[in-house]
Length: 105
Image (cartoon, one colour):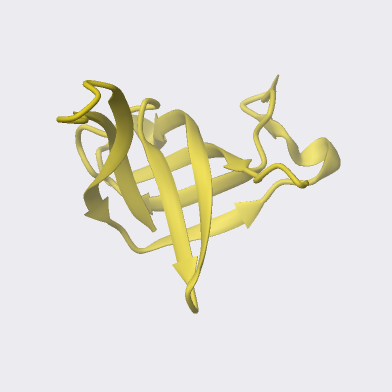
């Protein structure tokens, strides 16, 4: 799973700012879909969370970033909703994610 951070670039001809994403780190992880009543973590309902990502601790991650999973040339993009330092031991992270599903025409 690749973690990316947002940035902007400015067009030299129009001066318009365009959002771009820069890679921060690629982490081995597990990605678990959440279905139906499984959207509970620590006895609290998680709004708009579709997946849990479990990975080794990596400092500096933020909900402003996103996660991108690419498998066999197909990419899926996830908004990071929350980052949990499991047991607060700086060994494992649990990220709650919302998959960004492209609008259909």
